[in-house]
Length: 165
Image 1 (cartoon, one colour):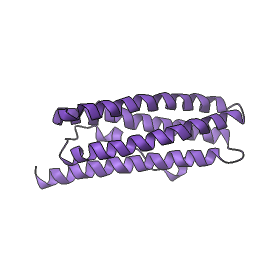
Image 2 (cartoon, helix red, strand yellow; image 1 turned 90 degrees about the vertical axis):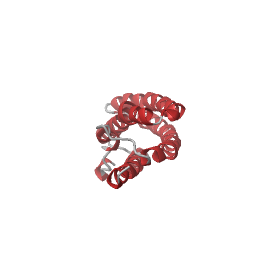
Image 3 (cartoon, rainbow, N blue to C red; image 1 turned 135 degrees about the vertical axis):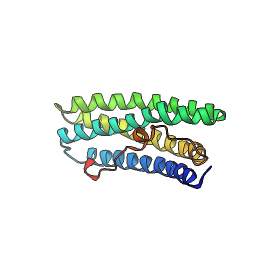
């Protein structure tokens, strides 16, 4: 592998870690905002839905792009990728509940933000485990030179927007 290509591959594993950090910060900020005595429902809904969309886009990009290319290059990682895709399905179900609760929160009070908080607590724990596993299992393969066939935009396009909190 040429030096430039190797540098690009290593950059992909770093970008994966950075995207995960941004998502961790976003969910932490959401949970902090929910912990306030009187969260602004409109802001809460906007931030919950934006977070749900960002995490969903990240995982869809991994499933359709990064993992597909990874499996072409490294079929020996099929079980690892299958585990990660299974996690994505579980996370998607929680995100769907969070989005429904956020929509409901727009017109109601106390119980809904508390329910969102419980969902986000569980989601945060699952995300942490998932991200750690993925970074250990996939980063080395990315560093070995998985071509970016255009999938990186969805996977790494997570913005670490301080205003999201």
